[in-house]
Image (cartoon, rainbow, N blue to C red):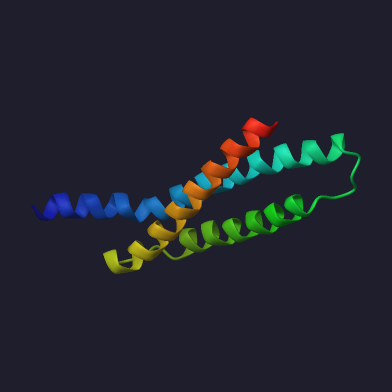
Length: 102
């Protein structure tokens, strides 16, 4: 029983970093769509591109934090997993909308 909990905890330790890296990939895909759209529209810079650049920096900092400070308890893991999970769901919805518009 204890071995199974230890294995589950090891899997959960990697979850925030994995979700954060997935969010980074989603942001880069969305950023590519918005960047290509600004070139077509002959605009110098779009506010959505700026927003996603800041979002990309924030997620890079999150990923660096989870690399440097690995949580030691389940309580330290719950909030980041929930936050990053909701962020991933929102990014997937935004990617779907962006994909349909492109």
